Length: 52
Length: 376
Image (cartoon, rainbow over the protein chains, first blue to last red):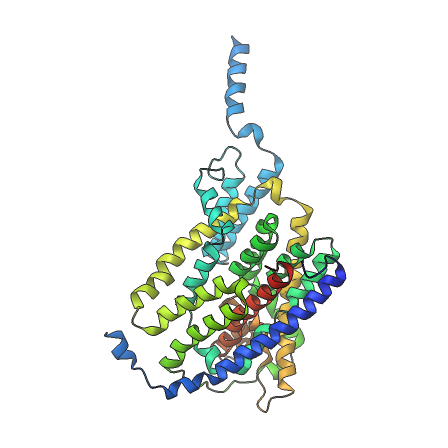
């Protein structure tokens, strides 16, 4: 176990986890913001897909 | 003759469960009945509480074979213990979920992490209460309000606490319409609650198909410990969004989901035997779960208010409370609280964005926790 089984360990784990979660989810937000770039590939027609 | 008859009746009674019945069983049977009452009369998460309540009752009738090895409830529990059912739940959820609101408004995604401060408050609280750090981590995840994730983490970090953790997680999810609104109102002004959100952009089919593929790659790359859950969520969503696998998407969202819910609820309820459940630890877990939900709701609202300090167009801070992962209950609560102040302020679609991001937020918190507590 990297984190010691103490109160200090719990605090350190919480701080690292919360900060990393925010950074990583912000990263997912960036990926989502870039997702419209996929529209340059082309367009898919919903009706055509349903009637394959 | 009478002596013989009494001995015969006594021997017969010893063969039944009656001889082993104690007050703890009666308390748990009453709890099971209360759960079914809440589901039927109050309509609190009936799909979950009916099964959990019923199997809780059966598990507390001494002599019941269903929870012993060879019984169906026992094998349902194997599905939880071997971590088969939680990913399958995510599979069904993925097939049922429209991630459009999350894709259309990426800036709200951060609220999915902001609303998880409760996880860490409960984690530290559990450590202060004397739990080991692994147990504390499993208890803290209740604050994510994500049932399958709470089960997943409990099995990984503290399997002996599976019953109280899953019961606390699902019970509080059902009670969110009662827990969240007072916190939301306390931390916002009426003026803030009246803020309306602009129309969202439409999301193309290409984006909808690209999203699950890209997220599956990222999560498997960065967070292997929780990849089984998110990968199945994304597979279910891919079936839904391609439109060429509608049959599979329907099966995942209906047939598979229904079977898994039956197995999961029966498995959870069957772990609620009085001798294991009626402990001080259970009360502590349930209490810490409530703390986690309250702090999670509060931190989400405050997170949205902090975002407003930097945004040109302010967002409605009630959206922050939807960052708790319970889909779609938290989004519905946000919508209802906003409607109470302005009957024309429809926030449900906007709230789904942070609500879905909350699923990822909980998974990220859990994945980081597993990586730090159980390094491979």
